[in-house]
Image (cartoon, rainbow, N blue to C red; front, side, top):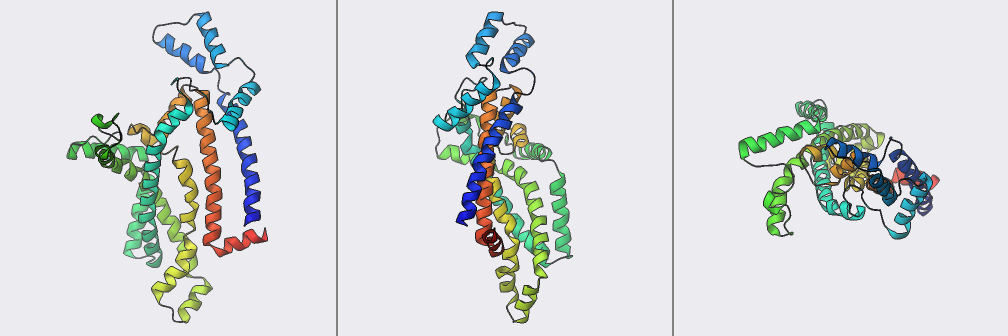
Length: 332
């Protein structure tokens, strides 16, 4: 396992370096840049910038430098100083902008994932054990409905129901009086009152998909020879089920651990935009629309790092949980 971990660590460094290059190049591929966006916005408002102002802006942000120089300035500041640069549009350090939204994104992502696990695994196990029963057909039908409904539509429906029948504004994560207030018990309770809708919206499709995966994996295990052998030895059915086939079928549980880390930053962008959630997704979308090079590049790099690290964590967790995978790693 240590040899495997060391090899993966080398792959992580090379992968992230390649991602940084591709990310920076892709961000600069569209025609124009941030100054072009500023000029277009000024013209849309009936204003215009003088050539001197345009030149000063380009010099200020170093947009006339060669692409290689811009890349080196960006990546070296991140690696050597932990400086992600200055956001063009927000006029603030990128680390400050992202940091303000990490806590809320983390709460939303972790809560949604825990809800998915709590609902999907018991239902998936039941559907596999009671295959072709009325309950199995019912949960399968609900699962397909959950996977088919777009998240933004479900968000709009729940927002309407909350406002129409409960008189509650469920957009955003805070009431107006707590929006800029310091953290206290009242703000925490207000957050809890607003959090259930986005959690429910995000968890619906994830729960539906996890139910199908858990059911399919458990069905594959239930008819293996070791299950028949354990049953023939007189092992109680519930003990046999939980000790062997359920354990082997819970690989999706550990596989999704890797999704948690990037989800802490990115979250569900479409749902966040529809529901006006102050998370990282809308900020990333705003940066893309404004061609905010350092903001977008830093976001993508952070998500890439978390995705790669999460994948390694998932692989190690799977190896710890499933001896078959650990044996394969040892052969490698």
